[in-house]
Image 1: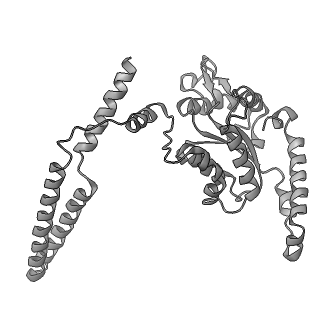
Image 2 (image 1 turned 45 degrees about the vertical axis):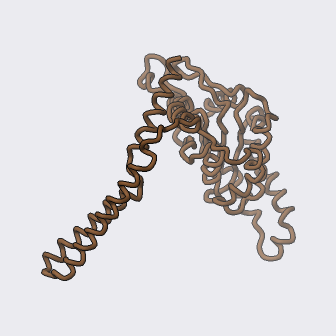
Image 3 (image 1 turned 30 degrees about the vertical axis):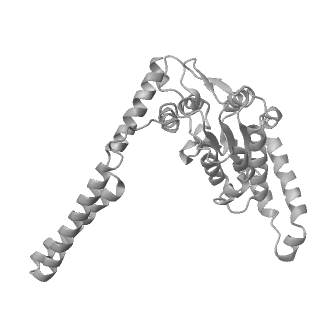
Length: 319
């Protein structure tokens, strides 16, 4: 029971600190008074005594207002016994564990139903990608997925600048309430065989063994996150063997023998494969409007074919 006692103790301490901290409007008075005093000193140095006298009166008025506001603050709820709520305990727990607190001021189902609108606030266009992503996340939250696998696994294909990374950041903020819940890995740094150990941890006896891997350590400390593998086609082939285990079993054992859980993560991989086909598929003028759907379908099939040529079938079947 000591963990529960520590949790309540820390929540009580946080509540006490909040009550003892002056409200923002009271701190604003200090800033205003400091500004008036600086102006008054400047006026005195410039021998503008009339302005200095006016500023002195303003300073006295601000000091009186501050004293009155401070009196109201201390006479307000300072004598009332503070109550530690379940929201505050959840906030302390989130800080300690890295598990986000969802402030369910509305039903999550309602929030998920308008997921496309929320994502479109930051990502312009990409209707088909956002629709497919939202539908998959809704299926996952509804429990229509293998409980052992990650919360979602996607490949975003397209040229640079179309919003692949921005959509990943937006998804992290939507799902977990914080853009910092995105774990981004540039796979161009893992092109060589010896760099694979940096991702999952060095074997015993090697340099960096106790530090943990860049991927496994971050997910272990922040299990609720979006993991972004940027430019996945540049990664060494050995990395895909570990990715298969993550996508299939939702877990991975690092070099120190610790099992890292990926069940609460969303896996996103971006690639520039098919960028030429996407660029060629853009028509112009009326031709683009009349054949937009047909052009999109042809472009999609070409990109899918190029992905099949580069990635193994067992890998593509899991995303």
